[in-house]
Length: 318
Image 1: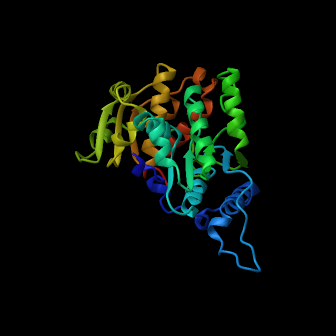
Image 2 (image 1 turned 60 degrees about the vertical axis):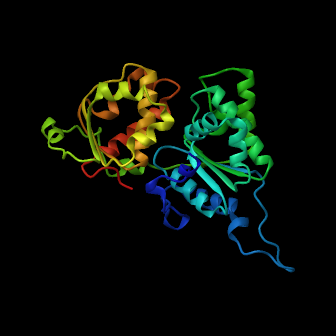
């Protein structure tokens, strides 16, 4: 599992040199500057008798907060590339799955000594998981590991409107104190060239998909039922090697549990740059109004953005 903790395929070559800040949103250039400052002592030539090298950052964590499609994951992957030696990149759920598979003590031993732990999509689903990660990050930071993270919610607002436990709120404050937070404004690059809803295919288009090892076609209900039998941390294995996914008879999801599983699946499809061909309801409309008004609104909006991109005729743009 640790060997898979690297940036997704579409971010394998992401660097500060190929991130294109939107001049209409100066905070994007500000985020580039923040990453450069955070990694300056790693990337600058060593100092000498008469010149000192850059100092390490004041805080051991850098938190990139912003809306959808502003380049947060690109910048996190760029930060990961700057880090020396052993380093890891994964989603919040992948790290909690690693702890679950290895046990807490063994996971700490594995990650200790790494220069950087990059955590993409740091979003709260469970207060227990966040307390676990807070403890883990505290131990790693104490031994010199730095933390990079992205989210659509700043660290002191994680859990807002969902949990009110005083112990949990203390954990959130502890996490926030470890990070320098950088807010990134801008337009969703996935929607700049795309309008309207996710594309709905004609049933004939679905039937015409080739019978190939990298193509699957399933009923929407069967897909949702199958996702319930697999831990979300294993969804990466479901999409491995796929180029196109066909989905028949899409409809609104029945509840929050199914919706959160589907969001996790969409994230893995997007990471693997899989194209979706679907019939029925536009895929970005599977989340009901009550879901979009609730605590997981930002998760659903990100998934909607990605579904619009993945159902485009040529698939998601890298």
